[in-house]
Length: 155
Image 1 (cartoon, rainbow, N blue to C red):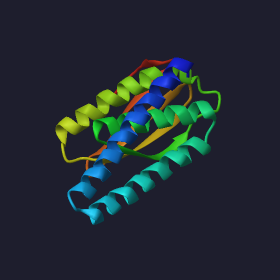
Image 2 (cartoon, one colour):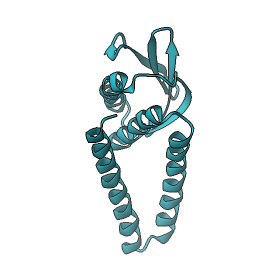
Image 3 (tube, rainbow, N blue to C red):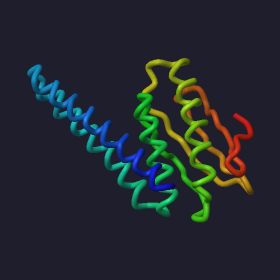
Image 4 (tube, rainbow, N blue to C red):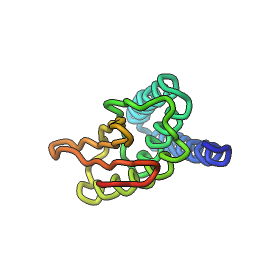
């Protein structure tokens, strides 16, 4: 990930965090401290999922996973990774932008079909010379796309 991409990711994270602080402030101003407390617990659990991604993988892979989770939150979907099996030498510079575009399109399609959906599980798996991105939908099965050399193959 280039420095410009990293700065953009940090800006998006900062913006999202400020939005979350505003939600807590709003609950408190409206006299709903219990809702604020519950929201803070959910926020802490979500941040723990981010932490696990940032410490459990090679730095390039961690950044890609974090970017996917942040993008999901921007759409209104919490992405929980079920399985991640990628090589440490995964070329994130090639796979990253294409996977983010394809995942955004997939999540937007899913939310158009089911506007109440707020959490999905996803896996990223190596399969020979391709990377398979799979999203598991509650009660509906799964959707996936594959990338080879940064170019989408099938969905």
